[in-house]
Length: 107
Image (cartoon, rainbow, N blue to C red; front, side):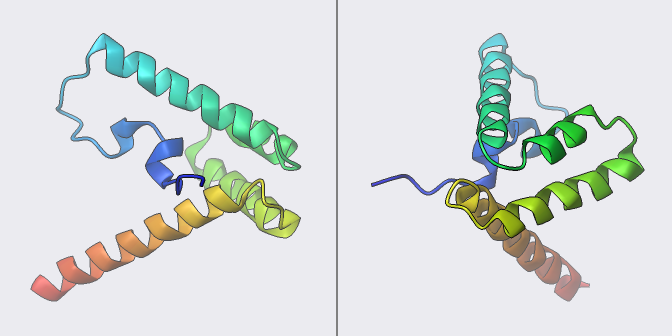
């Protein structure tokens, strides 16, 4: 049985880590390997071109739109290839929404 993929399987752990935390050379290597796995995964499906556009995008404002286009492509393709990523993205969004609601309810 395949392990359920999580968003952090695709993203560098620096996204989930405190920016002041130190990073060992082994962790840097692991991050690079995750990036390579993610790139290979994305290029292996039908949305290679939008992914490449997203990778090449250097403007933060444009990057959000390019990422949205890439995600729409993955949804539109409706293939088993992108389902793990889309499921992980949905899980991450739900988690963020719950955390935000909990934070706002404290005020």
